[in-house]
Length: 123
Image (cartoon, rainbow, N blue to C red):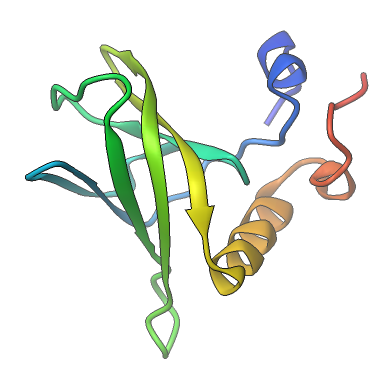
């Protein structure tokens, strides 16, 4: 992942991550494997053609494949951006275990693991 002006403005490392994800918005559920474009401690951009309204509250479920226990990360959030290629969700809440797993995923997949908690990325 290269550092660009958007990542500096957003202030959090974002990583690509291929796994199963579901997004529940109202009565709709979008499920896709490998549809995560960007994942951070603050939110996720999900590749989808589904029509989702900005401002909608949602539930995000990320299933970590390849684990014996079938770890599932559950976050509550809201849709903050819609593009032709997908939707951006900001996380409003998650439990401590989910945060710990998410932190490790972002840190492990980051080009700058020491900067995961450093706030804004410095060039």
